[in-house]
Image (cartoon, rainbow, N blue to C red; front, side, top):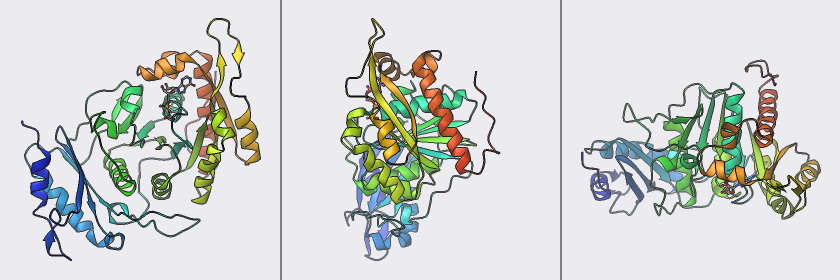
Length: 372
Ligand code: ADP
C-alpha cells in the first residue's frame, strides 16, 4: 500500500475546526511538525496554554480524521503551547499541558520508573541506561527501556533492534524487544537522519503520548533515558511521569564543572528522589598493560556525591570495549557478562533496585535478588 503523505495529513486536518475561532486548524497555523513514516503519523497542534484542557476533544478529532486515511497505522497528535515552563517546588501545573492537561501520567502495569539523566550530552548517559537495563534484566526483573532522548535517539542502535513497532489495533504500539528488555524509542518511528526540530513543549507532548501508547505489560522497572541537560523538557517530564527516582551520570570533568549538580537540583526541586550518582569514563584502562590512568582526576563523583548528600552508585572506566559493544548493538553487559565492566554495571543495578524497593516500602514486593 502506498504510504500516506504529509500533504494528505495536512489536507485531512483542514476538516478540524477550532470551535473558539471558527476556522480550521491548518488555516489558523496551529498544525506543525508533521512527521510521517511508514504509516506512523505524528504532529503537533499549537494552542494557548489556558485552552489546553478544553481542546482535548479537538486533539482526539484530529487524530481520528488522520487515522481514517488509507495506510495510516498510528497517529500521535500532541497539544503544545509555546510559553516556557517555569517549575518550582510544588510550582503549580506546567504551562504547557501535554494532551491538554497536566495530570501525572498513569502507567498501571509499571511498578517503578527510574530516570537516567545527565547535566549535559556526551557523558555516556544512553550507554549507562542501556547497560543498566540489561543488568536489571539479568537480575531476573521485567525491564522496560524508554528512550526519551528525542534529540538523539540511540536505543535502536544500542539494542541492535531494527524495524518498526507493530500496532495490532491501530491505537497502541507493541514495544520492541531484545536481550530480554522491552524498548520504545522515537527512533523506531522516524528516520535517524530526519531533520525534526522539536521545540520544548512539543517534545514533551510527543514523549508522553508515546510513553502512554505503548503496551508495556507488567514491568518491575522501567528505565528512562532522559534527554541530556536540565531544561524545561526534563523538568516537565520529571513532573508528569511518576518517577520512583533518578540517577545522574557524569564524567569527572562534568563533576568539576558542576553540571551534575544541576541535574541533582532539578530532581530535588520537583521532589523526585535522587538514587545517586554514577561516574562514567572514570579512569582509563590501558588495553595493553592493564594500567589505570586517571586522566581527568578520579573519585570526584564520590566526593561530590558526599558533599551533596547523594549516594555514589559506582564508577565505570573509559574503555574502548564499552564503546564498541554499545555502538554495535551488543551492550557489554550481555556480550561480555563476565568482564569487570559488566560486573560494575550489575553492582550499580543492584544498588538501584535496592533503593527502588526501599522507596516503595521495604523491599517486600519484588523478587529477591541473590548474587553469585
Ligand atoms: P550520552 O547519552 O550522554 O549523549 P552516549 O551514551 O551516547 O552519551 O555516549 C557517547 C559515546 O561515548 C558513545 O559512542 C559511547 O559508546 C561512548 N561511551 C560511553 N560510555 C563509555 C565508556 N565508559 N567507555 C568508552 N566509551 C563510552
